[in-house]
Image (cartoon, rainbow, N blue to C red; front, side, top):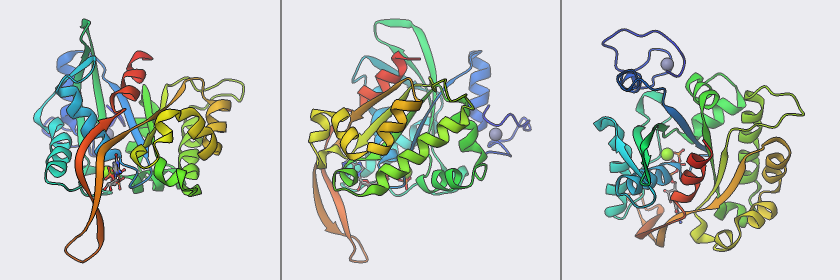
Length: 279
Ligand SMILES: Nc1nc2c(ncn2[C@@H]2O[C@H](COP(=O)(O)OP(=O)(O)OP(=O)(O)O)[C@@H](O)[C@H]2O)c(=O)[nH]1
Ligand SMILES: [Mg+2]
Ligand SMILES: [Zn+2]
């Protein structure tokens, strides 16, 4: 489905890109091509936590959409995140090996339009793998394949880092957008029209992002903002956070680690609903 390699009938993962073949089989049964929404961002921006919450809220019918997972493998990500948060810990870092990523595959429908289903594929990728692909294109074929076929993209940025003036957050997102721009192979006078939601994660640390995400991005992520304005026709900015209060504790090796004290998702569904509405 992603790299167009032919695999054996009993294979579990694609031999070329390690995407689970259950995705391809399900889409053959449904007779529809699924829509891919790719979530990208630097390591430690909060991709795993965000995706886990998003899927959990969808399956609990929190907003206008409802998601039904296609196969138990689609539930692993959501389960890992929610069970870690319930025991007051953040989930571990996503491994760089493609065959260990969690892939969510679900059918989503709008409550008011139950006849229209979207089959969504959302993999949880590792930030370091993304960084490697951006710096040396084609080192992770699966990332390239996914982005080239995505009908919507979420770019996650660490708003707390950006608000403190760390330029790295801006530069990484700037690189990702430039990668997307180049991937579309368009002439300079045509803008990329794939919808891109820029999600300002960890906005609990900088509530001004909730008040006005656009001004926040223009001020603290100016390089990213300018590129979006000149090359992308369909971009929106959203602030999110999933944690209501953070404490600090120590792990087994006496490192200081953040401890989520209670979960209070805010702004999680908005970017997703905006993307679906534009697809
Ligand atoms: N305050 C706050 N911290 C958060 C939030 N979401 C994530 N974090 C912190 O960000 C860290 C990284 O989150 P992950 O979801 O694992 O990050 P990731 O983008 O998946 O990182 P990789 O797997 O390495 O690519 C967590 O361990 C938390 O410390 C949030 O909403 N608020
Ligand atoms: Mg992760
Ligand atoms: Zn493949």
